[in-house]
Image (tube, rainbow, N blue to C red; front, side):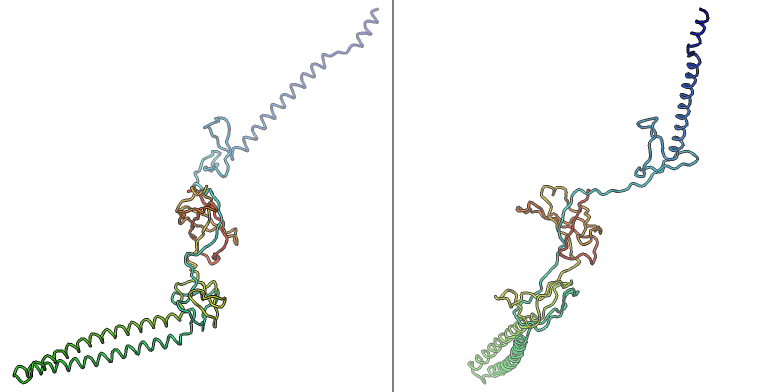
Length: 350
């Protein structure tokens, strides 16, 4: 019986040693985890120590990362983080976009004040001209003859004036002699009266002759102006953009019917007067004001930003398009900016 009990006891599994070894393993794992956590925290602190500063304003224990956009830059001097102030960066906010065209405030199609045959044209497209420069000539043969005739009339009037002055001098001398004779009773009263009448008549002729000279001079001046009208001059300095007529064609201030009469010699644009005109939807016109800064980009040069500013908001709206026209001044003059170019603008916040 005892032998069987001993045999059964030998078949039992002793769990005392397994429990002890298992407990030791669990404790070892926990210790390793604690050491790893402590080591990781120390490493994180070493990494963040040169890149972060403590911000205790909201979270006393949480470090705050400083980005390049922040207003303060941190420097590490001897392991201590210091805040260095930087200049604020101005950011322009675009509040409204619009599109329009380049326009010229001074642009003219130069024509003639009289109808005439074009004999010479001295300009071509793209040519720069100055104020008063001769652009073309018209046939002035008849105008020249009329001017010379008017000058001859002036000469005739001046010659008549000389004759009248001589007659007046003689009439005054006769009147003086008659008066002396009449004082000594050597002439009649009729002779004295006639001599006085001759003087008065000569004085009247003198006034008439002077008036004729004034009329003749005015006529000569008028014919001179008409002759000058056959020479076409530039009204202001600029660039010729269109050549409208050629020698041999007829030019007139207004169309005379048909398709053979020109109404202009050329078109001149003052490049210094270029500006931008845009149509802004009337629902957003409240965002636009005089003097507002604008950034413009030509469709031909989209990467080139042109500084500009609002000149005026035209005080009227287009009923059909529900827009208001805005004039924008170009602050940077450049030869690449040409009339009628398309442009996109962005209105900036004040």
